[in-house]
Image 1: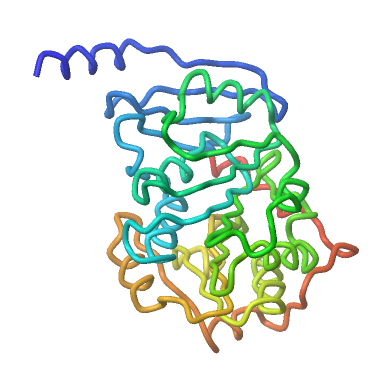
Image 2: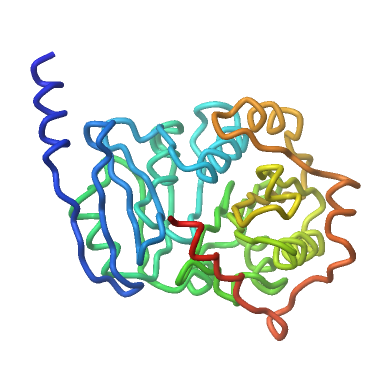
Length: 289
């Protein structure tokens, strides 16, 4: 008991770690409610939350939804091969390592200075099979062997926007190449009214995968506010019923769209190619206030 109180005092007294990284000004801000937990913020935009004592704890809404996808990507506890495009504080790689021991993972995070900061301040479990590459996401994906991954997760933002070259059919062709048959692709998307980017990304994924599902806050889907949506894709049937149950019962309740409803939601949007790709829209300043 005394050790816990001491730990809480240390965290309460802890100061933010602030450093310049390739992508801007990074801050690691201590969580006053959890003893060894930190939030990574870059240029004022929250990126990741990590609890070193409980890596299976996911705080951010969109990361919890990606966690549901990870939980259902294979039978509980079974090791997987996972690729994470975008590392941040390695939250989801830590989650996979905690919930699926002996998994083998590759994290691609181009910001080498950020990787060094996170490794130093929030070290990875040395027994976790996690390899980190400091290269561009598409370049790192190209190095993944054909049919290696059970799971590919994309969560890449530069200046709070997804880079254009990670939004195209050509990019998804390489995702499919890296996935095993029946493998699952999940991507964190951010958009606001009129949701043109989100609709285009759904159409793009539909051009390359047989099965899709979208998890988001209903107010985001109605175009009422800017927010995140998790798009899930596979060539095999997705566990839509269980995803729906988990999303609805989450502390941040979400809705799952799939099938004809999701097709109708695209409103006739066309797939995005490399030649037409643009970065996702910048969030309004009020999002991070």
